Image (tube, rainbow, N blue to C red; front, side):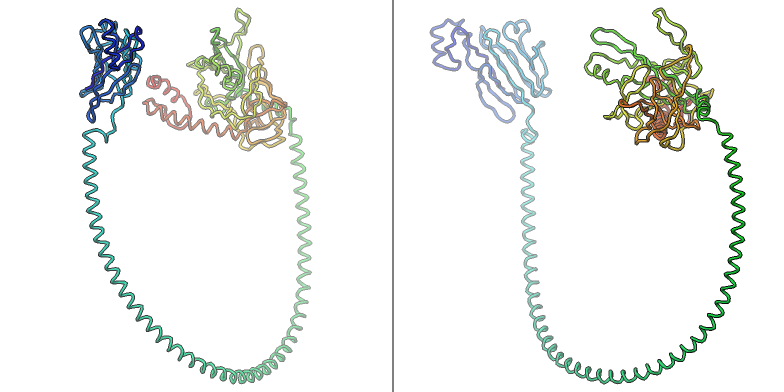
Length: 628
C-alpha cells in the first residue's frame, strides 16, 4: 500500500520550494494557517507490491508508474487534515479506481481523469497502460499515475520460486548425467588403450612377415630371369620351324588358287552371255508394258480434266456475288442481333443533382435458350470512363450502381413510342427485356476480371467514344435473357480461326440508328487486316453503337466481337472467336458453382450442368436465396 498526499504551491509565494524544511518552517512562522494550507510538500508514496516495497516522493507535474496489481491511496490536505480523494487497488478482479467522496463535493476541489476522460461514478475499472491524472483546482497542479502492464510470468512471486526450483533440479540431473558420462568415457579410453597395444603387436608381426616375403621375392626373381632366357631360346627355334612350314603351305595354296581362278573365268564368260540374252528380252517386254500404261493414263487424265472443267463451270455458274452473299448472311443474322440500352444514375456530391447516364450498344444470341454475349463496356460504361473514375476517386460524383438498368430489344421490335412532354424520345418497355423485369428478365452471368493495360482504343458506345483496355477477353460479358420455352435465333462460333484477308461482316446498330422507332440491324463489310495475340484488326471503321456486335464470315459464323477502333487509325478491333469460346467455358463453370450454391441452400436448381435454365432461374427466386 502506498499513500499519495497532494501538496501544491500558491502563486503568492513562488520562492518557497516544496520539500525544503527550512522554507517550510519559515513559512509557518511568517504566514497565517489558511495561507499555509496551500503551501504543499511533495507527495510521499509508500509503494508496496508482491516483490518490493519502497518509499518515494512525487512532485507536481511529475509521473509515477504504478505496477498492475499495486495499491495507491491519494490524499489531499483539507480543513481537518488529509482526506482520501481516490484509491487504486486490485484484489482478485480487474484493476479498479474508486473514490469515497461525493461527485459534487469532489469536483469543487479536484478533477480525476482516466485516460483523458473524467471519472463520473464512484468506481471505474482500468487496465494495463491506463493513465490516471489528478488535477488540484485550488493550486492548478496536476499529478499523473501510469499503470504498468502485468509483470512477466517468470517474475511473479509464485512462479519465480517454481522456476528456480526447476532450474536447480535440472542442474542436479545434468551433473549426475555428466558424472556417469565421464566414468563411461574413462572406461572406453582404457579399452581403446588395450586395443592400441594389441594393434602395435600385430604391426610388429606383420613387419617380420614382410621381411620374409622380401627375401623370397629376391630368390624368385633369379629363378624368373633364368626361365626367361630358356623361353627366348625355345622361341627362336620355334620361329624358324614355323617359317619353313608356312612357306611350304603358301606355295601349295597359291598353286590351287591359280587353277580355281582359271575354272571360274571360263564359267563367268558363259554366264555373261546367258544374262545378256535374257536382259534384252526383259527390257523389250518392259518397254512395251510402259507404253501401254502411259497411253491408258493419258486417256484417264483427259477424262478427269473434262469432268473437272464441267464441275468448275457449274460452280462458277452457281456462284453468287459477294454483296448478295453478305446480304444473305445479314438476313440470317438479323434475328440474333440485339439492341442494348444501359442507364445509370450519377450523383454530384456538392449540388446534390442526379443525372441519368444513357449509353447504347449491340449484342447477339449465342444459344437458342437465350444465352447472349456483349461488350462489357456497353453494360458497365462507368468502369472504363477514366475522367469519370477520377471524379469518383476525388469524391465529386458517385455512381448509383443499384439504379443500373439494361433494356434489350431484338430486330424489328418497336423501341420508341413517341415523345414525352419535354420532347425527348420515350422508350417502349413492353417490347424489351429488362434487368428490372420479372417476366422478360435479363441477368448478367459472368465477365472476366479487368486487366488494364497501356494500350487503349476508342470504343463506340452510343454517340460517344470512351477508352477501353485491350487485353485478351476482358471486355466480354455473358448475359441470360429469360427465353427458355420459345427458342430464339442464335449464331454459332466459328471452329476455325480467322486469317488475314478473310472477308468479314460486322452486324449491329451503328449510331443507335432506328427506322421509325423500330430496331433494324445493319451490316458493315470489310476484311481481316491483321491477327494479333489479343484481337482481330479489321480494315473497316466500327461506328459508335456497333460495340458488342458479332463479326461474321461468309458462312455466317462468328469470328469475333466488335469492341472499338484504334485511336490513331480507322481500323476496327474485335475479340477473337477463341477468346469468346474461353469466356463461355468460364461462364459455364461459374454457373455450375452458382447451381451448387443454390442446391446447398435447399433451392432446387435442377441438374448441375452449367446451363442457366428455367429451373435455375426459379431457384434464384426462392426465399432462402433472397435472405442470403
